[in-house]
Amino acid sequence: MRPEVEYSPVGEGLGMRDFWLYAWMRRAAVIGARITALGLTLVISVLSRPGTSLFSWHPTLMSFAYCLCLTEGILVLSAEGSPFCCKSRTANVRLHWFCQALVLVAAATGVSFMVACKNLSELSHLVSWHSCLGACTVASTLLQALFGVFMIFSKLLRLSASLQRLKLYHATCGLVVYLLATVTVVLAMFSDWFQASVNRAAWWGLLLAPLFPALVVMNQITNAYLPRKKITS
Image (tube, rainbow, N blue to C red; front, side):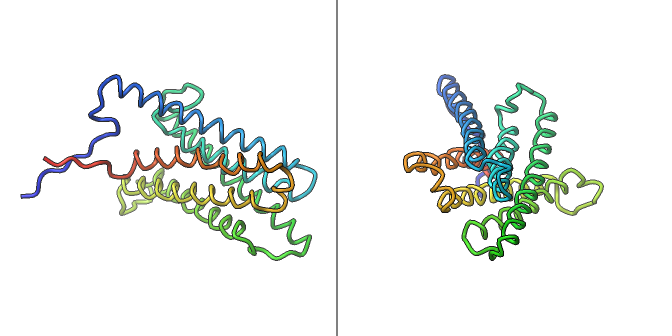
């Protein structure tokens, strides 16, 4: 007979002192990820000098969408919750929806500025890894938003998939979007424009900056939605 299988929550089996240490380390990581995402967005916006050209709006809006709004939209659902000390799960979910809506609006606007800039300059589209992965990121963002809509209106749409399965699809797609966005941001830092805007030491620091929020977000999603460590008896 196969033994029964249970799923253990993260931190189960730790002593109280170890658990509190884990909790504080996790809280510090979430705060650090938020600060890093905000700082990276501000730095890219300052370097872009929005308003000086059509292109200047592209990095500004895309960093706002994927570095700031997407990060906060995911982290607001963490155990640490909202940075505004809101303990209501419903309020945090609504803030998640708001952040995801901002991602879609800002990303669509940022892409529009990039398309307009290339059309005016008579340059080809989708000729670099950055642009190709960026297009995949935007497409995945739309798919993630679609799963979110299915979750909200699952009863109205009378979908055959269960709510839990839709949550899994939504979370998995969100993880893919965040990883694609992280790689796209990193690739943007290899562009001639970005390398000409910062010195070498600052470039290395900014190159590593997107990786820390990505690790925190990946850890949160996998711990919250993917099967946890199995215990056999």
